[in-house]
Length: 429
Ligand SMILES: CC(=O)N[C@H]1[C@@H](OP(=O)(O)OP(=O)(O)OC[C@H]2O[C@@H](n3ccc(=O)[nH]c3=O)[C@H](O)[C@@H]2O)O[C@H](CO)[C@@H](O)[C@@H]1O
Ligand SMILES: C=C(OP(=O)(O)O)C(=O)O
Image (cartoon, rainbow, N blue to C red; front, side):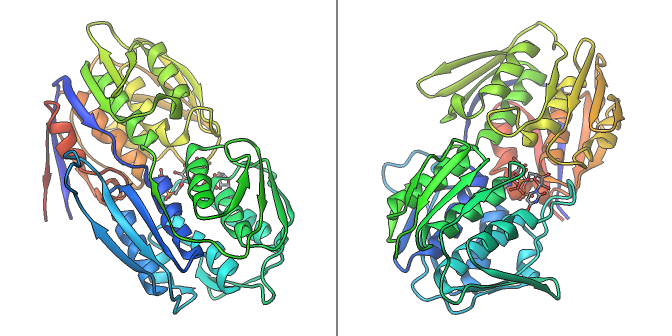
């Protein structure tokens, strides 16, 4: 199994290009199932999750052509995918494929909307909580589908097609909103989604669906309205920049000190995190090319932060913030409200000498003057990268084991960080 070796202590200085967002690219690829014409997606990141979804879509009969750099592209352009679901040959998404990645479960929505049937294994994904799919099932039932669970599979049927309905989510759910949105585009009549997730990735998917001929208004607000159409067509769409990757590198710079340009980043996608970083003592400047993060000399101020759905502080940056606060001048408090078990990084950060006390959903972090490198490993994506950040700031050598999760969500992590002066390398085997 691959590992990442880091020798910490150096400041980060230079430019980091921000990739397309994993959490937008995945539902956008899935939306390709809604049409028999070709959907072209630009700026798709090269990630293990994207490759895995290509396999899953391939199993349904989808043709995917990947093109790399084109003349005129700058060095770090993401890949372009041509997704053609002309013939869907299989409406089953098997356990072996779906269990590796949570978002793959969402294929249930377009399959049901277009083919009126789907059999999809219950999902896997990051181990950060129980992560049920009851609200996704509720939304599809509201749209007139019949769903049963048998042998670990959700079997969904809507023989006469889906019908528009009023869907109200009792809690904000990104997955529920994606599924309801995609399914409703081809339903007969009008659907309203209340208490919808407002995450930028939902807006990106809605924008793409509208380019494909869907009639969606209100995406980015808690109330989305979808007027169903009989057919969607092909379109071309560019995946928005990854706000979690942006926030992760911003926190890395805040922790090590230095001066880094996050090229292509969009500040409005992570304002709450940028505000927290400013409070912590980093200087954030917005310019034409993205966001510049600097921290010179001064120490890190402690903060009190609670994760919340967008536009609140994202749960996907909670672990990284905790790494940063491990070196703050005083006690910080971080409360996780989205996932009940997203603290797997606490015991690993302790290996660096971090002092973190967990009480229910709140972690108290007593900052220490210096972290020291250590062998560590993590069981989820953002926890893994929090260990990389801690390793960059720690004195001495850190070995991050079991880096499979990192490859799911961070494109060319070692390359981007070494270009800014970090000593970081992948050790294969
Ligand atoms: C691929 C992707 O985009 N993943 C993101 C997505 O995950 P995901 O879409 O899985 O997260 P949700 O917003 O759906 O989950 C939020 C909360 O609702 C609960 N819930 C969800 C569905 C359901 O049927 N029943 C239920 O109880 C979940 O357990 C969780 O406690 O949004 C999360 C919250 O911003 C992010 O951390 C993930 O990175
Ligand atoms: C939790 C995440 O991914 P997933 O929902 O695919 O597990 C994530 O992107 O941080």
